[in-house]
Length: 170
Image 1 (spheres, helix red, strand yellow):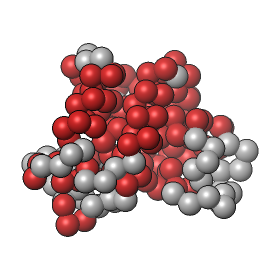
Image 2 (cartoon, one colour):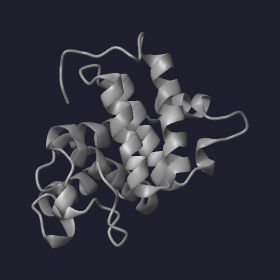
Image 3 (cartoon, helix red, strand yellow):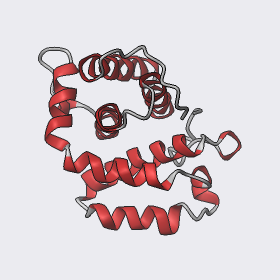
Image 4 (cartoon, one colour):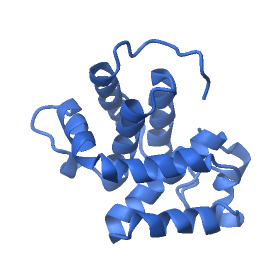
């Protein structure tokens, strides 16, 4: 993943993420949209798949996303929201609550937590690195480190060995 275009919040077209990286970026944006506008999940999914993913100049970052991964994350986070919010909340510094975080950061952490608990086919390091890169695309280095620390704590709690490298690739 790369730095975001300041006008669109999406990576520059010349530095497109992988199909799975593009799916994660879109999932964070879709979950943000769902949370902010209280739009139904299926409506937002349809908007992304039918319009944004088809690619116009403004949506060049979505040229070839992994639609299955995107849909899994966007549908999975709301279904497991209570569990995921608990995991993220427990990983935050004492006294901090998920609601205090920026909404984009909330969407990013919930997406990462979802993959850590629901996608054992994806190596822990890949999930953490992808979401840390996304944090860097939206936030400064301090927030990138924050996202890394929270996701690492969640991985240690939810995966037996967070440093293991699975044979599958992302």
